[in-house]
Each structure stands twice: as C-alpha cells, then as structure tokens.
Amino acid sequence: MRVRAPFCDALKNGNIGARYEHPHTRMAESTLIIIKPDGIHRHLAGEIIGRLEKKGLKLAAAKFMQVSEELARQLYAVHQGKPFFEGLVKYLSSAPVLVMVWEAEGVIDMARKMMGATFGYDAEPGTIRGDFGCSKGYNLIHGSDSPESAEQEIKLFFRPDEIIDYRLADADWLYGKND
Ligand code: IDP
Ligand code: MG
Image 1 (cartoon, rainbow, N blue to C red):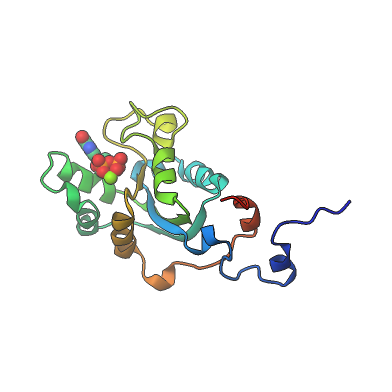
Image 2 (image 1 turned 180 degrees about the horizontal axis):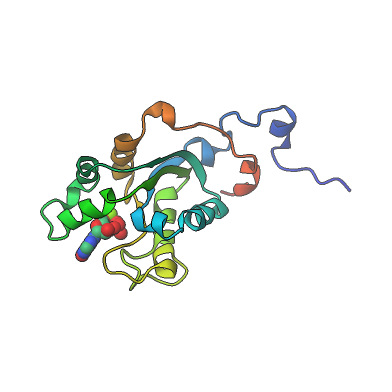
C-alpha cells in the first residue's frame, strides 16, 4: 500500500527549496547561537550542531570567525559594568567561534532550554552546558534570550543577504497538522 505523505503535492510540484508554506515555518523565529572558544577548542562544535539539527531547528546562517574585543563588548553590552565583563570580553575574543542563526517557531526558548543554566557546574544533565562542562567561567555556547535581543545580536554578525531562506527537505514532517 502506498502511503501518501502530507503536503506531498509541494514535493511533486518541485517546490523543494522554495519558501516554507507551513504557517509554523513561514513566520519562523530566529536566534543567534555562538559556539564559544572553548566549544571550538574542545571539539564540541559538531556535537552541539548535531543536537540543534536533530531537534529539527533550521540552520539559516553560519560564520567561523574571531570576534574582536569591540564586537564582544557590543554583544555583551547589557553586562557592561559587572565584575565579570572584562573577562567575558577576553574569553569571547580569545579564539575563533562559530556564529550561527537558527530558525524555528519558538526557537529562542527551545535553544535556551537545550543550552541549560549559565554554567556547567549547575546545568542539568541532558543540556549542552550540563553534559559537556563543569566550569564556573567557560560555558561553550551563547544563545539569544528574547526576540528583541535576537534581532539586535543577529544584526551585529550578519547582513540580511547572509541569512539564507530555504526549505528543509523534511519540513513537512517536523510539524503535525495540529501545530
Ligand atoms: P547566558 O549566557 O546563560 O544568557 P548571561 O547571564 O546572559 O548568561 O551572561 C552572559 C555570559 O557572561 C555568560 O554566558 C557567561 O559567559 C558570562 N557570565 C555570566 N555570569 C558570569 C559570572 O558570574 N562570572 C563569569 N562569567 C559570567
Ligand atoms: Mg544572556
């Protein structure tokens, strides 16, 4: 017996690669995720990306770069004046990082839950910080904490034309009809 895939007309009509048509993906939220210097040096970039991919989130942009102190200060401007601020700027700008935009409905909260509490020593097992770190200073990953900060942070790292609009091949299976 042949099973008919939902929305398979879109596939038959050759719309793969076109904009998302499902409402949950058409208006997708975006978040800025950074695999910080310790994540790169500890060979955890693939593991972290794999978790985000398997969750069903969509990678929309990526840049491997060394962040300048000036850019680190801008990203973390909200923490200026706190005792850890200068150390934080040095940490983020000390070695290359992988900066990415990920998209999905509700991606900001989902990614924050997957990251876990700020430092590995008290982050829950099952989270990225909880599974791969025990430090009170290094914590592997940055993720935007609100739609407003996501918008500002993404603008710091990417031009609009660097954020790729495409349709995941498994998009029709990521959300059910009741989503
Ligand atoms: P978050 O990354 O979980 O959103 P925030 O409170 O926004 O945590 O802090 C931003 C970053 O500043 C953290 O990811 C961490 O690298 C650093 N940070 C925060 N609090 C401390 C601290 O008490 N000591 C040292 N570094 C800190
Ligand atoms: Mg934060």
